Image (cartoon, rainbow over all chains, first blue to last red; front, side, top):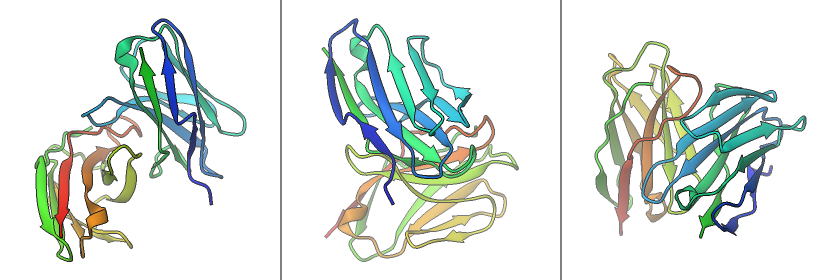
Length: 112
Length: 110
């Protein structure tokens, strides 16, 4: 079975641009969460979606938004990119809201 | 969620058991202990989780003290591929989010 897949794997953007990151959960999983990992730190929670509804939001500005589609895939959008948004963005999926979460390999975003 | 405390680094000889401690003295009755690990530049990998009973799977064993204020992750026969940052996470108090701390850098030496 395929694990959590994220695209693209690497991305370079310019300050002020916007970016869309994509995540496909493990088949049968209905919950998707997004995390940001800055170099040298542990991942930080951004959003969780379950059954297409937002179930949690971390301490991130409104420039960050996400959604979950009927097939349970998800997109993370970041507007007005800042240099500080450079990070590894991780997607995790779980069968249910409180089940163990399985992570993808992440999207490495570099803002220049 | 309850805060966890882990040693910043540990070493282990290849083939020996690696015992990684975690303190979570403020854990609540409905909060679970989760362990993840992250090999450099990869996504975190789920290892094991438990509430109050000891748990074992094909990767590791989780020993939770009776008062639930601390736990130990045991890798029975460490290999070089087990070198990673290991995160102990208490989950459930404020929803299903995972709150990652600094973790323990485990280095398995040949």
